[in-house]
Length: 353
Image 1 (cartoon, rainbow, N blue to C red):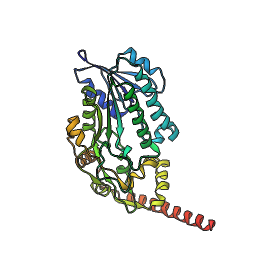
Image 2: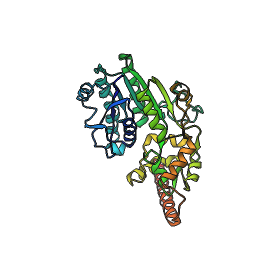
Image 3: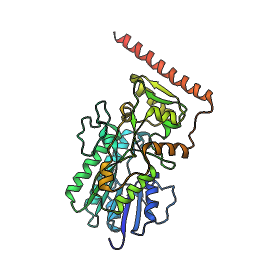
Image 4: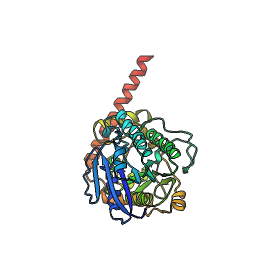
């Protein structure tokens, strides 16, 4: 557009959305940025105009129309049930919010581009997964619950919107887990623990995307023309055991039948917010192919998975453990919990007999 883009970003209170907004503020080809959220952003923004609004409210259509928004970047999804106020509320925020936003976009004559922040979790995680998922892969084990299922549903609604509005360019970005000094990803809490819980007998494959690569991909998707679906991850992979060693953390293998109980204990103790749908991922992990990102989108990540992880450790100042007594105490607590749960399961089975 000759006078610059007018961009609406949902979920502007999020850390990653704030980084993207600041990057867009520096571009001359972006005329106006509107950030929508129910929470006021804590990051400093100069040209971004904050509007306190809930995307589940149909009034969001007026914001898009009144500002002649031509590009919508949808980032208002959450993967943490506890942060949303429970799984039911999380689904409402994620899925119903996306539906209402798309309904608003449907009526916006000025809209020309829709960019969706999605996740590689849409591929699921299972023992017979391919080494690397491509964007057009047939899903043999589609997610059946949690945030991953929400993401699958949202992508479905977005594709249906695209069929109704073929004049709107649609870009779906499936990100691996973010790591960085400013964005808190799903693994931040895990590697900050003195002991890293693992599923006994499993060593999942992990891919990460550095926050700087993620921001650059968002900016290019918003300001350029890149219709399609793209995996976004750093090249290469790490195993969870490798990550634990690099972080200087001992691992505590948890027997499979007790994994859900241990994860629940961590959530209640506010030590790590591990959602139930992430437990399968902690068994098998996941790898994605980024050929389409490089060849069609035109971006090669600057940070590999291992480089992103090492940079994350440095920025977060995560080093080898110093207080050995603390490690011993955490290990004792974890094993006491596992032993107690195992005894409870044994007694319950014995009573049923």
